[in-house]
Structures are given as C-alpha cells and as structure tokens.
Amino acid sequence: MAPVLTPTQLIVIGAVVLAVLLVALVVGLVLARRRRIDMTKKKEELEKPKSGGYQAGGGFNLSTGGGTATVEPVEHPVVDRTEVDGQPGVGDDAAVPRDSERRTLVDVDLPEPEEIVEEPVLDEIAPTAGRMERLRGRLARSQTMFGKSLLGLLGAGDLDEDSWTEIEDQLLMADLGAATAVEIVATLRTKIVSQGVKDAAQARALLREVLIDALHPDMNRSVRALPDDGRPAVLLVVGVNGTGKTTTTGKLARVLVADGRTVLLGAADTFRAAAAEQLATWGSRVGADIVRGREGADPAAVAFDAVKQGIDAKVDAVLVDTAGRLHTKTGLMDELGKVKRVVEKQALVDEVLLVLDATTGQNGLIQARVFAEVVDVTGVVLTKLDGTAKGGIVFQVQRELGVPVKLVGLGEGPDDLAPFEPAAFVDALLG
Ligand SMILES: Nc1nc2c(ncn2[C@@H]2O[C@H](COP(=O)(O)OP(=O)(O)OP(=O)(O)O)[C@@H](O)[C@H]2O)c(=O)[nH]1
Image 1: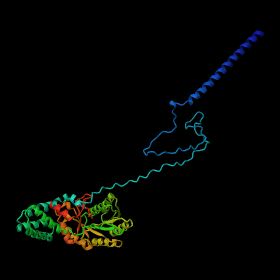
Image 2 (image 1 turned 180 degrees about the vertical axis):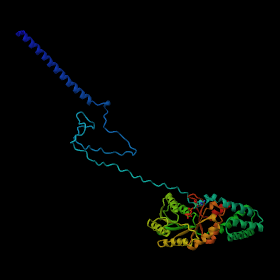
Image 3 (image 1 turned 120 degrees about the vertical axis):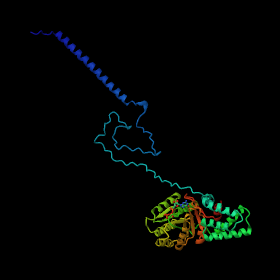
Image 4 (image 1 turned 45 degrees about the vertical axis):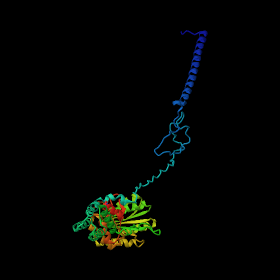
C-alpha cells in the first residue's frame, strides 16, 4: 500500500512549487525587458549617421564638357514613399507597393544644344598696290633676254649694220613681233644718231624710253569692275582652255574683295565640271558666292542666272568664268557670243577680259584674233609671264588687237596677279 503524505508534507511541497514558479516568473520578466532594450539600441545605431556626418544624396557636383548647364530636379512621381532624404529607411517597403500609383513618363526639358556656326576662315589677301614691283623678280627670264642681251649690244657703242640686225633678232626672239621690232629699231637708230649714246647708262635710259612708248602708256588700263548706279559691274572672262581663265577669275575676285567690294562668281564653264569646283574654292577663300549649273548645262543660262542674282543681291561685281573653248570649233565660239547676248538682256557687260597664255607666243595671238571677232574684247590678261622669256608678247597683243593689256599673271599663287604698268614692266625687263 502506497504511503500517504501527511498534511505537513503536502504544505511543504506546495510551497516549493510556488517558489519555483515565482522564480521562473521573475527571470522571464527580466529577460523580456532586456530584449526590449537591446532592440531599441540597435535601431538607434542604425539611424546614426556614418562617415563623420557625410550624408549621400545631397547631390554630386558633376561637371560636363559643356560647361555650366544645370538640370532642374524633377519631383518624384510616387508621393506615398516614406523616405524623406532619398535613402530607404527602416520600415520602408523594399519596393514600391504594387497598388501604388505608377510612375508615368515625365517630359524633361533638356537644354537645347547650342548651334555651332563655324565662321569660314578667309584668306589674308596680299596688298594690291605695288604688285608689279614686288613680283618683278618673276620676270627674270624675260629680263635675261632684254636686260642682258639687248643692253649688252646697245651699250657696246658704235653700232654697225650687223649690230642692228642682231638687236632686231633679239626683239623678235622676245616675241615682240616683226612690226614692233622693226619700229623699235628704227626709233632707236634715229635717237642714237640725234642724241648720241656715250655709256651703258645712257643706252639703258634710251631703250627704256623707246620700249615704254611702244607699250602705249596712255591706254586706259582700268578694269571696269566697280558698280554703276546701284548695278553691279559685269565682267566676262574668256579664253582658250588652260590659259588660266579660272585662276585669273579667282585672283581678280581677291583683288576686288581686298578693295572692300562684294563679288559674285558665275561658273559658266559647264563644259568642265572641275572648273566650277575650282572656282568655288577660290570664292570660298575670300567669301564670294558662286552661281553654278550642272555639268553640261547651257553656259548662257548660268551666266544669266549669275548676273540676275548679282543684281538682286546688289553685289559690286559679277565675274563670269566661261568655258575654255577651242577657237577652231565654230559652234563653241558661237556659244560664247550667245553667253554675252543673253547676259546683255539684263545688264551691260562692262568688261570682256581675254586671257592669253604668254608662253604660247604666236598661237596666243591667233586665239586673240578669233575671240575679238566674236566678242568685243575690252582688255587682255597675259598669264604665265613668270614662266617665259617672251614677255615681249605684250607689245604684239596690244598692237594686234588695239586693246590694252590690263593685267598680268606672274605665278600660280593666289595673289600673283598684277595690274599691267608699262614703266614698271619695262624696268623689270631691263633689270
Ligand atoms: N606659272 C603660272 N601659272 C599660271 C598662271 N595663271 C594660271 N596658271 C596655271 O595654269 C593652269 C591652268 O589654269 P586654269 O585657270 O585652270 O585655266 P583655264 O583657262 O580656266 O582652263 P579650263 O578651265 O580648262 O578652260 C593652272 O595650273 C594654273 O595654276 C600664271 O600667271 N603663272
């Protein structure tokens, strides 16, 4: 039979159980309180700013290559976010709740890119005054012929018949032409007989005087390139291909621009596409506009358009570069006549400049005759005088055509065009 606990024993057991329960309760309360304190502490630690107080999100000072442009901050489209400083905080949703208002597309005004207009870089143009003097060295080859040989013969004194024949031959070799050579020899002989020549300096002075006279210094050599009555001057540049028409047109444009004039170029050489390209380059270097047609277009139509645009734009001068037609092709020469007639429907042609290559000698003269029959040549440009000993062609051309040489080409450089001045030219020839 199981022993029966006495009432005293039962009281003791009950007291022990009660005490154990009390202790468990107290311990449980203490632990629960401690846990609560720890959690609070951790939250405080999280909220403490790090890195010595630096807070990201205040905006980096970024620079761009574009300089100082600023972009306005755009308001966040979702308004019920809990963060206040752009950074997620404790208690924030990890992601925007699915039922929150969706971000929509926001139009942001971006700064307009600045349009960069590049200023064309224009050429410096060499001074137009005194070019003949500056370029006189270019006549070195002709100078050898005149200055050295001719002066040598003249200065030798006591000229016999053979000496005079030799002088005449020298003049012929320098391309003065028979008529001019005979005339010059005759004048020299008369003057030497009447005045007498004692030394080389006197011989030089006499020859200088006779040569200048033969160049008709009184001829009007001004290039008619200035506007008249608010109307642009119209110049046609004609000549056989390869003589230097396009180059001369470009060089002349530079001279006019240097003089403060506005110029429009007309590329009526539609025969050779590269000619228009070449002329456009000349124009762009000095800021002169160009009117051109497609390859094979009617040159007269292009010339007409150029003059019309020149009048509308009120430029000072329109320079029309024509096709370098072979003078033997009658039809093509007719075309040149047509260019002039068509242009004249709206403006007078002030100047027809015939470009002749000095190195071609007599051939140039034949060309000159043919061109003069088709158009009224008002002035001659003698090119490539730098490459020839035959500067004497100047005398022949003037004599043959009765028109003045107005300009001379003394090199391939853009400013190697000079006004023709008889005295300066003769001085350059005589050295
Ligand atoms: N040395 C020298 N060369 C020149 C002179 N003038 C022009 N030239 C050269 O001659 C060549 C022909 O010149 P262009 O102006 O193309 O001749 P173009 O008459 O227009 O020829 P096309 O367009 O074929 O009718 C080029 O190489 C020029 O540089 C000059 O005075 N001296």
